[in-house]
Every structure is written in C-alpha cells, then in structure tokens.
Image (cartoon, rainbow, N blue to C red; front, side, top):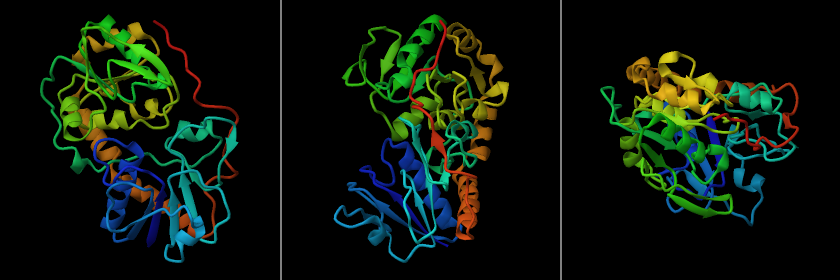
Length: 329
C-alpha cells in the first residue's frame, strides 16, 4: 500500500527532543515500512526531514501536493474537505470550541471518541527501540512530572502540592521554575522541586527510568497520554487523576493509582511496595507499541479504501474540552 502522511509541523523528523504527535507519526511510518508498505510524508518547513518527505508549499493547493501517488492519505491535522483520494484524519487533541470533524476521523481513546460523539479510535503506540532499557530495580528517591508546565490543564501547581504533601522530591520535565507565559504566570520556589526545562531524548529517558513514578494530575480529559506510556515502559508507575484516557491505560493496581484527591494521591505515592515496575514495563511494551498501532490503522485504511466510513455520523464537539476539571485537596 502507498501511504501519505500529512502534518504541517515545523519540528524535524525523527523528533529530536520533544514533539508527541511527531513521534507518533514517525513510529507509525517505521512500522508501516517494516510491514512492506511504501510511505511518504507531506510536512511543514522543518529543519531536518528524511528523504521520503516533501515540505508543504503554501502556494499550491493540498490536492496538487497530494498528487496521484497515494492509495490512502493520513492527515494528522484537521481535514474535512472533498478529496478524490481515500483519506482518514487523526485528531490528536481536544476541541477548543464547538465544531465538527470529518466522518473518517480517528480519535486516540474510547473516552476521546465519546467526548467528540464518535466511535472510531486507535491507541497511540511508540517505537520502544528508541527508549533503551527500563530500570526495574529500586528507583531513586524522586518522582517526576512530565508535560508542558505552562499549560494549566497539565496542572503543575497540583503536582507541586501533591509532592509536598507526600514529602517527596519532584523533577519537573517540561518547564522552568517560573513562567511569564500568556497561559498564566507561575513561580514555584519550593526546594523539593528540580526543574529540568524542556528536556527530551536520552536525558529525559534517564530521568524517567530512575524515577519512583510519574505524577500526572491533569485537569482535562487527556486524549491519550504519551507521558503515561513512556513512564510505564521505563518502569515507573503512574499517579494521576482519572480523566480522559488515563483509566483506559492504568487498568491494573500494580501499574499505578488514580484519584482526583491530592491527599489520596500523596498517600498512594508513599507506599511504593504496591506497584510492580516489571509489570509496568511489560504492559506498555506489549500493549502500546508502534506495530500494534500500525495494524489498527491498517484496518481503518482498508475500510475507507473499500468505500466504508469510520464513524456512523460526522463527529462533533458541543463545547470546548479545555475547561479545567475539578480536584480536591
């Protein structure tokens, strides 16, 4: 099959440090090539791209740039227009306002699909060969927060409060000690915190694999949660709010603990004997890899190529899914 992936991203491929959607596209591409498919990319103006990528030309229409080569086009950005080539579109985020989506839109989890009045979803998967080996022995004496610290929905302030209640050190991966961002000002002087900036690659993986666990008290319906499966793969259990896709991932007690109560999360973090680092690793490795993801997308492609649709009607959001969800102290 000839597959064209489309994403107007300015980040390089393979993703160097961060870029969740970019890592998913790259993992999908490598799995599809391994299965014998011919894969190309229509990308944004990124610094470095592989040979099978073409940079998007803003002077030409989407149809001109797609051409007659692909059997299927896979958009990783919203697309709901007429196209005389079979296509699907993966929605990687949550609706910011009331809107509709193309009927062949794929969401990232069952809850993500339900929130957008859809049925079709495919769980994300990663190429775990890029992550090295997990640390399954006794971890170091700290937990980690992994996410964009400037985003209130990721709830860094909540992670700070929980870690303080639990009496544990917290490494923040994804931000600085203070921010003057348009998304909101914050400053966290607490000495139990260590800020590592927008860290990625092997340094990020090393910090995660030595951690006692991921603290992830998000205040929105997480569409999927790459930070969750990355942490599990590297052996770190997950302590999170039960929002969005997270209960679909943390399905067993040895993988972590879910609660919207800060005090309950803090208490759970104090007893590391309940969690199994080897089980965390094995579960993520077998359940959320790029080969499994590619096989699921293959079924979507075949259905659309044969004239079928992925959802019974056009998905839609009735309101923004960026509103802050409740937590208790």
